[in-house]
Image 1 (cartoon, rainbow, N blue to C red):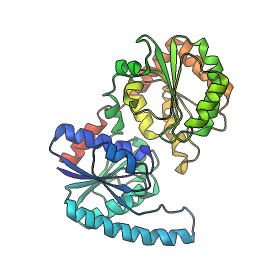
Image 2 (tube, rainbow, N blue to C red):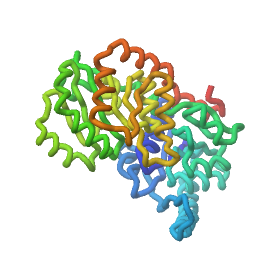
Image 3 (tube, helix red, strand yellow):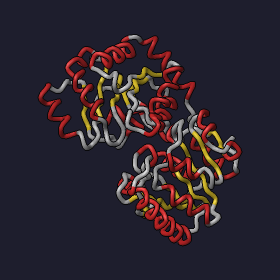
Image 4 (cartoon, rainbow, N blue to C red):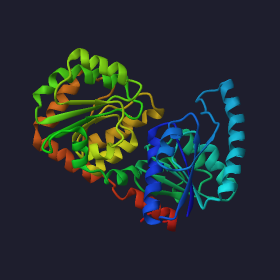
Length: 365
């Protein structure tokens, strides 16, 4: 099988594509891939490190209101479609898979025009502009949430879950703790806010650090995001670094750390929630308010209503709120175990396999 992957801008669009690639390679070791993305997005760094050939196209996102910029964006889109057709004719894929972000728009559209089989994967409850547009032209739409069916043509839409749920199951808890140099019996509290980090979460985490010594059985891992790391580490040194704390800008072994986690404090990106539910990790979710259609809060409320997470919106976020939620999950082991069971009930650990079946047979089940 020859596969073109496309999607980017944030890790939430890139990692599902890479998870699909790994599942395909597991089933078909001779499969070959090409990833088409933006030279300015995170994919330009992440994808080559994953060992997948990468080609860049120039494209920009549409504004949600009328502007002169959108005229220039249309011109860039037309040129990107033309460039995508060149790449597709040269690579000759059997299928093109888009995982969201504006860069996948011209690539998947070009494939549909060339008569190549196409699929898009939507991670969130409410789709972004690119997937909304592409759903009219693609062969299949794979969704992570049942509620997404309302936004897509039902005849071509299939519930698969998020493939990141499958990928994270390969994590090794023992290896995660060993990488931190901590004892095997330590419980982990993992704090992160996506590949770029988040100032609000960093500020509130810094505020609670002086008090984490009261949980000696827990080790805290604080992933700041690379752009925030230098400032955060200065603040940590000023406060006084607790002995049960590790601070890092980025975690390249995130599946291992998640596998070892007792509690996670994070944003509510769709891939993160897929990983948390696949592993059954109790969580404190702080949805980003800066995303389209407030989709992170909609994602998070589903876990909250199932009893798998505590949700704190960014406008409600404070040192006291975070301390209260964290104390509740850490100290009340019955509550922790109940949240763990509820999270597992929501998980779809076979999501990547479902997508592979959809590509192979047209059916996910």
